[in-house]
Length: 553
Image (spheres, rainbow, N blue to C red):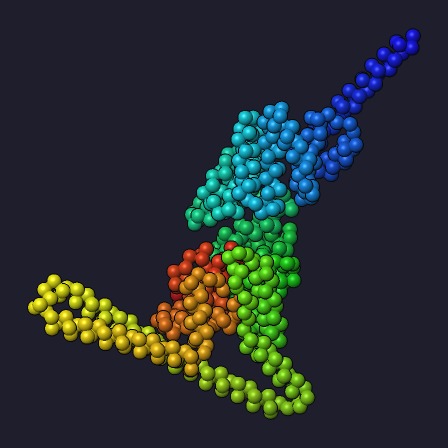
């Protein structure tokens, strides 16, 4: 009798255990379904309930995959991939291609966090290969979308476009309007990266009817991106999208570019208020702050708000310092922080003048000092122009002498074939070539003496010019250093500089904007300019917009 009872007890225990395991598997399937439906809070509750249950190896693998997935889709990733690695091991062993593809897809996210983008692409490519064994459109779509994004970061623009189109094909096949909206948007930016703007605007127009299907949390960024594409060629339409974006979220980049449009329209006060608002909400993004402060300084200088300019100059110096510390790597270890001491001295002089005004209360002294500073500035400008003209004359004469020398040497080469008959001519040409060479050396010494003794600012500009020609960046340059560079360029390429200066543009040319235009005049590409000036893509678009020539009247 006791034996029979024991057998019944074991059978009941086995049945209860089997039921418990079945309920865990069912619960994990429910969690999977909730994640697909984007019901993340409910999925999180069920996942917590399942965590304490007894699980088979298969359930443990499924649980690890779901926990990892839920972490990434809710922007709260797990601290490590230990659960996901366990799932990968199991799905490799049993040959479950679809689950293994899903696991590799989320494995790529850890590499994205670590900014190891090539490894992220490799994981995602393996996910793509495995997903092709099945017909899970959702999995295939998100893999293609991720590969497009990763290739965009790595600068593989044609692959970015290819995978964006693959994702669109899947979205159209299943008629998912949400996916289609994001795909059209990504395709348009992929075409922008390869400068095919007819296709850019074609696909961006295709995305607009699907805007209502975009997640509300993404609409501000989505609408801002559309506005950026229209900004240069159709600012009125861009303005509409920027203003719609602000309804969902006041992103600093939206405020900045909307301000640029208001500024171009002549509503400078509105632009100024938007720049200030963007600066207050820009958080820790130093690139955004740098662009915004340059705009604010230009406005304050125009209206004589010197105190605000001083504070913002100090802030720019701090930002440049922060950017330098963040971007230091093996290729720029030898760079030293070099900020112009004259800026600091100028600030000290201003504070001293302010103190004297408060102590003495004499308006006459301030007027006299202002007159003196104005006179000194004008005198300095005249002397600087004389130095530039002299340097330009030296440079032009060197070019002419070099041409004469080269022509003489070429003529000598022609006469060498019949040396005996042309001996006298060869001797005369050799003498002319040597005289030209001697004159060139003398002029170069005169240039060096001019730079050393009479024009220290032009000498500084030449050093900065040489740095750019050697492939260095202007990462830690101040506005004054940019001005020195510009003045030296004006001295040796006066006609090019004068042509740039005379063109009427959207905003008054600052030293920063002129530096950008000179780099363009020197034949630098957009990628080289971004590297030299340490600009983000948005920063490049902004400075390009501000230096855009006004249409001829």
